Length: 577
Image (cartoon, rainbow, N blue to C red; front, side, top):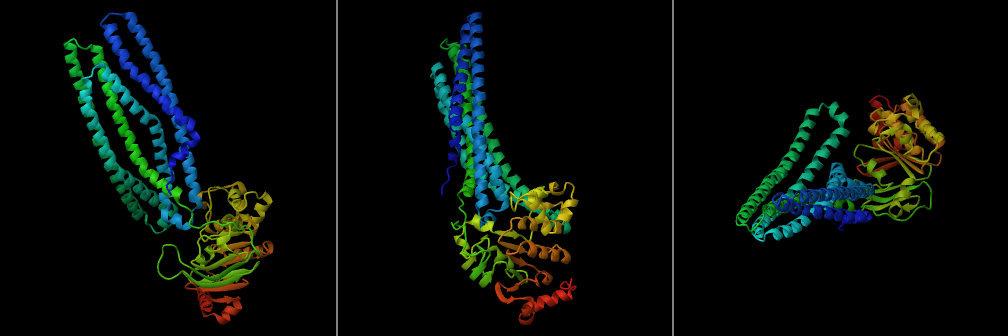
C-alpha cells in the first residue's frame, strides 16, 4: 500500500496556500529593487536629481518593509504547516508501532523505529518548510529575474542560455549521486541508535562482565561507519557548491563586460548594467536554492520511504470482534503447535492439549528452552499458534477483539518493566481509574506495601526509568501489584517471583488465594517450592507436555519432575525452605 504523506498537510491547507502566496509577494518586491536602483543611478545620480533619489529611496525602503513583513508571515505560516505535519505523522507512526505485533517490532528493530520516528520525520518536517518557502521563491526568482534581465538587454540572454543549463546539469548530477547515499546515511543512523539502545538498557550486564571496552569498540565501529558515509555525502555537497559559485561569478563578469561595452557604445546606461548584474545573480542564486531544495528532497525521499514502511505495516495479527466469552476464566489448548515467525527447524511447541479451569492454579515447569514462555504468550495472543486452537473463556483467541481479550488477562513478565514516574502511576497502569484504597490493597497483596512506604514520598515517590532505583525483588512486587489491581479473570506469572525469597513468595501466594478467589492463575517457575502447592503442575519437555497432575501424582508418575525435585534438593534444599 502506497501511503501518501502529503495527506497530513490537509488540516493545514490554509497555511499551505498562504505561505507560497506570501513568498511570491516577497519575491515580487525583491525583483523591483534592482529596477529602482537603476533609476536612482541613471536619473538621480547621473542626472543630479536629489528629490528623485530621495523619493525612489523611500519607495525602496517601503517595499523592503512590505517584503520583510511578507517574509516573516511566510516563515510563520510555513512553520505552522510543517510543525503540524511533523506532529501528525509522528503521532500516527507511533500509533502504528503500538499496534504492531511483537514479530513486526522485532523485524524493524528498536533502533530503527526510534530513528524513523525522530530523525526521519524531522527531516520530512524540514523538507515541508523548505518546499513551502524556497521551492516557491526559487522558480519565481528564476522566471521573474529572466524577464526583468532580458527587458534591460536581450544580449544578456545569450550568457544565461549557457550558464543556466550548466548549473541545472550540476543539480541533476547531485540528485542522481545523492539519493543512494542519503538512504545509506539513514541506515547507518539506525545502527548507531541500536547499539546505543542495547548498551543503555544492558548497562548493568556490561559492567558486571567488564565489557565496557568491547562495547565502546562496537559503538566506535558503528559510529565510524556512519561518519564515513556522512562524509561522502558532505564531500559531494562541498564539491558542488563551489562549482555553482564559479558559474555564477563568471556569468556576472560576462554581464558586466558586455554591459560595459554597451555603455561605452552609448547603447546602455550604467544603472541598467548594475541592475542586470543583480538580476543575473538572483537568477543563478535561485538555481542554487533549488539545488539545496533538491538535496532536501533527495534526503526526504529516503526518509519518506522508511516512514511509509511503518505507516503501511498492517498488524500481522488480524483483530476480530468477540468481546465476551461463553465461560469465565478458562484456558484451553487444543492440539496446539507453534513456531516463531521466520524461524526454521522443529516447532517450539508440539500438539499441546491442556485445559485450565476457572479459579484453578496451574503451574508449568520444565528445563530452560522447553517452551514455557512460548506457551503462555499464546494466551493473550502475542503470537498466533501455527496449528490447533487456543481458547480463552471458550472463544478462540483469533476471534477475540484483542483489547477485550487482554483486558481479561494480567501478565507479570520474567523481566519486570517499570516506567519513570511515581509508584502510584506505575501501579495504575493495571487500572487507570483505581482509587487510592485499591492501590494500597494491590500493594499489600503483592507484598510491596512495606518497602513502598519506606521510599521518600511513599506512593508518590519517584521511580527511575526502568525501575533502576529498585532492587530486583522490589521491581517484581511492583509488577505484581500492577497486575492484581485490575482483578483479572486470568493472571500469568512468567517466572516473575524468582527474585523473591521463599517466605515472601509464600505470603504472596496466600494473599492471592484469599483476595483473588475465582481468578485463574498460570504460574511458570523454576523452583519446585514455588509450584508444589498448585492445583496441578504441567511438565513441559522439548515443547511437549509429558505429565500433568498434583505434586504427589508427579512425584509418583513423572521421572522428569522427580529429577527436577531431586536436583533442587541436592542444591540446597530449596523445597523445604
